[in-house]
Length: 154
Image (cartoon, rainbow, N blue to C red; front, top):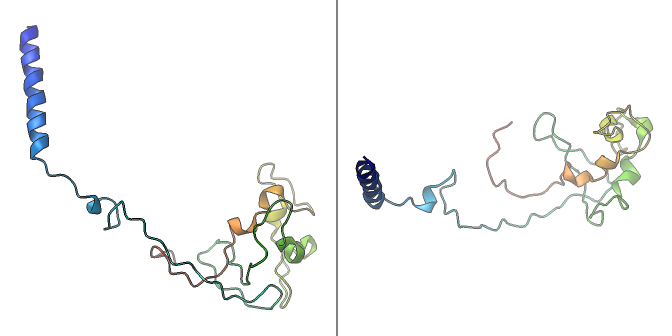
């Protein structure tokens, strides 16, 4: 009985090995959604930021999709990196008394969500939540960069 099982197992293994040699290898350029080699590492063109400096009145561009954070409509040269100890954005946009009041020519105040801890969900305070200090994590500066993939959300 054991000899028979050994014979069947050996036959299956040999058949699988023979089949494996007859199957064509898959070309790496046919893997994934991109029709290029998975080993290609294209370097995107460095974007340039021709936005005006902070303080110059500008109209903020349209949001990329409903609910998206607004795009930064001014240059961020000299404002980054943003750290917990150094955040130049707060100088103009930290106005808890103006929440919801957008006025022409005045920097847009942060929304109430920036004054609420995402962990405790307390009511808004007059101090920016420690989880919200890194502005450029959600808000992106404008640039002339071409999208790496097509945006079909709009």
